[in-house]
Image 1 (spheres, rainbow over the protein chains, first blue to last red):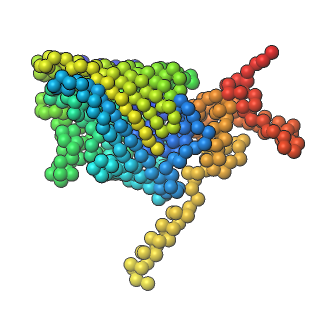
Image 2 (cartoon, helix red, strand yellow):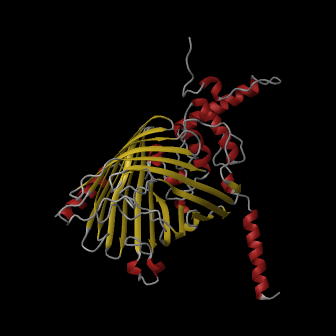
Image 3 (cartoon, helix red, strand yellow):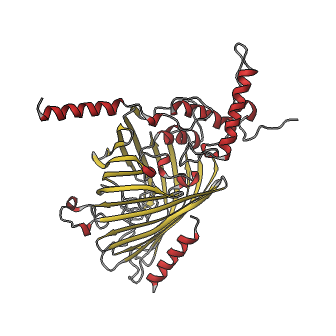
Length: 374
Length: 115
């Protein structure tokens, strides 16, 4: 009965909402590849993302001259992404801990031997791991593309916060649950093939097959997997704009891996300076057999001025609805500042509440992050 | 020449042709008033237009396909024709300062009215 009700609600939502991502895509009514080399978003920015959006439309202080955008020549471009973070919190001993750590240090390379063929590689400097790389053929009819390599399957909102429950969740600072998030962690991405196309007015379709990753990243590169063990993913996204300042995005995402089914809806609406985006996910057998997990993400943001955004967020994750009780909620209030080109400051207060977990409720955490990219 | 040499030569020729091909990626699409040859030239000009009107690209363009026409884009074309005509016919003396979007719009979507 609950399963049927869930699918009825999803179906109603899909057909009621006028027919992708993080905030910037929604605010501009455009897909991720407006600014990113990666057609499903994230990572290295393209020419528009670097010399127009990041230079003129994002920061508080704009520059007259264009800084170096990483282009070596017309066939080679490099980029980088660096994050330093501090998470002030109360540790298990009851002391205030203030770890400061390099959350991300990536170097990215894009080689384009021809207009429609590109090779992308991302190296995590800590460890020297080539965690993401792919070769892509683009420029096919209907803006289609195909790529092979180590790819993060296109699913839901590709947030830049991997601790969001709809992404990887709490990896280190856990609160005692069997799992505290989905499985899109920023580690080694599964190997596979992915394709995308544009169909109709504002509708994009992406789909892929990769080695299994939901229950553990690609054990043995999938040598022991049959075709039915692979992860099949599908996402349909519709972007629609109204008047000049109302932009909507709605998407359905699916992953099927062996007996694991992951289904979700995501999207949002942007009205001038206010943006709301959401994601609801249901996972069957994701953690272990017979488990049903739910994840939810809601974010409301307001940009009073260019380069300044106030954010309120609510997240929920229940790893197994069949247990007596075990769920985690997180409320986040924060500020994001883009003072100048290539720079971002994030300040957040994060309050976590767990459902019937021994040890009492966690104390609030204070997150400070410096993000630099080129 | 044996088979290996033949295929090697073909590979070299094809590779050379690929790398020497004129890149359509650099050429702007559907320019009806402007006479720029490359996207970079067009982009530099577009930035002056955006600053002149105090708007972002999305004000005139469909960001999924910049070449598509929109109402604001059609208005902008007329404005560009007018600017070009004024500069050529009326501000044509030696060292004359050329007018641009900013001259009238002053960073606003519509020229400010002053009495």
